[in-house]
Length: 285
Picture 1: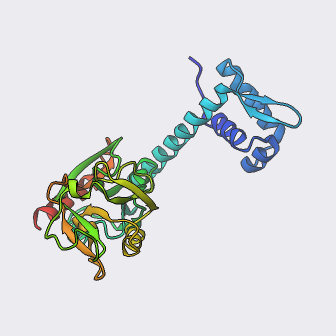
Picture 2: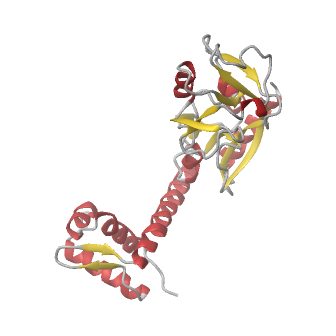
Picture 3: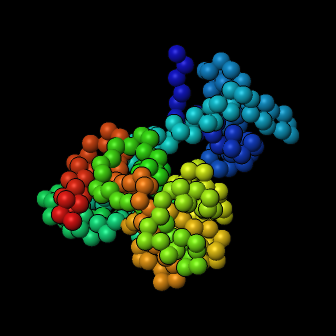
C-alpha cells in the first residue's frame, strides 16, 4: 500500500490551495524546483495524477480534490496529536475550557472552585466560542473541554457528561398575542417566525417559519424587540431577562441539557479531574 509522508502532504496541500507553484514555494519557504519534485514523487507513489499543470495554469484533478479534502484533515490530526503530546508532558500547561458567553448555566464558578481543590489542578484558560463552533475547538485541539448544549451542538467524535437538564422558554415582545399567557405550547408557537441560528438547521419549534439569521442571543433579542421574530431558548441561555421582553415557559418543549464535553478517548488525567470536579459542582447545586 502506498504511504504518504507528512512533508509531501504539506507540500501538496500548499500547492492545491494556492494553485500556483511559485506562491506555494514562497509559503513553504522552499525552492520551487524542490517543490515540483516533491509533487511528482507523491504522484508517482500514489500512481495517479493530482494536478493538471501548464506554464500558466494549475488545476486539481478529481484525485487531487479528494487528497486535498482528506489531506487537510490528516495534517490537522497530526498537529493535534503533537500538541496533545507536548501538553501532556508539560505539567505547567493550562487546561483550556471553551464556553459560549453566558452559556454555563451559572455553574462555572462552582466548577472552577471544585477543580481548584483537585490535587493535580492546573490553571484553567477560558476561551469564548460562538453559538455553534465550540465543539470544533475540541476537534481541532484549540480546547481540552467545552460546555455545550444538547441537542443543539454536534457531539460527533466527543465524549460528554450531562451537568444539568432544563426546560425552554419563549421570548416574546410585550405586545405579542401570547404575551399575556402564563405559559405556552409548541403548537401555539408553530405559526410564529423564529430566527435562523447560524450553523444550526432547525429552530426548535416544528413547522415554524424561519426568519432573520442570527449568530448569538444578543442579535436574537434585538430582532425580538423589533418585532421581527420570537425565540425559544434553554432557560439558562435566556438569562439575564431583558426588561423590555416577556419570557414564558414552553410546557411541552423537549428539555435541553448542559453538558461537559471532551475529545473521544482523551484519557489524560487533567481532563478526568476536570470532569469529576464539574460533576461534583453540578450535584451541589
